[in-house]
Length: 581
Image 1 (cartoon, rainbow, N blue to C red):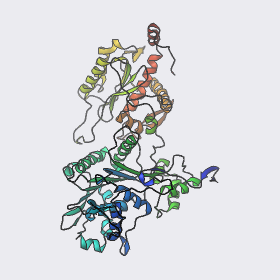
Image 2 (cartoon, helix red, strand yellow):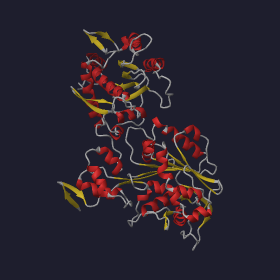
Image 3 (tube, rainbow, N blue to C red):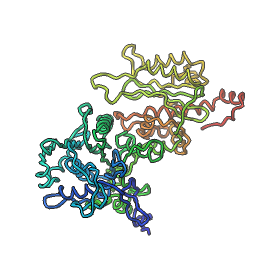
Image 4 (cartoon, rainbow, N blue to C red):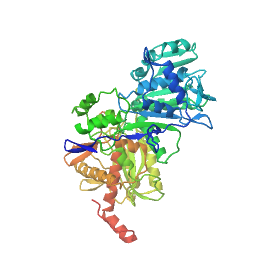
């Protein structure tokens, strides 16, 4: 059944998009539960020792209870957890922090490790017969990790009111603001923020990673996540695990949440090995609209059991024109969506062929170079003539951990060496290079002018198409994009590249930095249509490799439409000439 609303058909019940075993149903329509799980012990223990407030025992919603059972699911043969690490992705306000806090409390002083015994009938915990029983970790070390103190505080402030009087007395819990101890210091919960070096070498027994959609290079989020993973891997009993709580991330930020989702999807598709990642998400379907008729039914689907959310208030926020639609979709629909002015969405780029694509020695190709001195990235991208394969040959940009008091300069000699290698291994037919605007303090010339001149002298005779060959002079390589005529030509190439991507006609090598730059690029209008640019002039999100990719595809069309290519095709009998607009 559907209902009519604002001249559109809206289902009476919106079916959410789901990920994770929590949402699987059996033939009878009921949710499937794990066959063997320590989660039953967690449900019983939290109800006994935790509280929502004084006098109200802890009680999970049905959704949270299923999550608990699946997170603690075990292999009955090895008596080990099925999942090595996990992610719970939900809309804002869903209750991720209380859930994570309750599991952290269980890992802190509860029977969170398998004892090797199973429950018998009528046991004191009320656990189903045959399910595993747990024991307390002898030296639990629980970490609540985030990239800022404010993010750890959202979880740490839950603990003082969460532990019941019985728990505090039996486990001798000493409540502190930053560190909570139990059993005379043998167990602890601590808040940690982005100081990866200080964390290196620890052996935590459980780590809760909070708001990983904010964990990026600029705040050392990736380095911190890597340290946590290493520390967890080397735990003494091999059962230390990490759990990330996140909202829908913004594509292109290259956050820890984005990388983790990509890893999960790659494993699901069979492209990489399954390493035991538990990923659970409840998202609005792709067809859901941000209209009055759609909002409430969609929110009812996406909130799950979080009945405490005020849907009318959320609806008002979504309809508020001051809030960008992309942000409303991420925050309230839990959808991973690009910004409204995004040039190409990551999923559109991924839909183009990119598995196992690589250049072969001796390939005919064209090259496009975008130079920078320090602030932007410097890139070199090739495009193979026979099939249009886009290949990232080099990218240089300031490392995230570069000392702020030391100037960064793109290593020109290293770039020069890569160019030499490319010309030695392949057959470049054209090579356009934009020098950028940076100047060399020593000689007052633009940072790349001397190198581009040297490339023209070294390789100009091998190039079938010159960058400049007109009354304005001749140069085999120099192609300054500051020229208005070239800006118009590049603008046309931007539109053509976009249409080719949508038609899945741009094979590429799957380079991660190019994909990130693709996601960073924004549409910007000019006198000839639209081109691309950064989200703002000061943004640290680079787009230079996209410029190179578009330029390389443009250059391929220029070569194929050139008289020299037509003569070559006729002489060799290889194919026919097709004019590419």
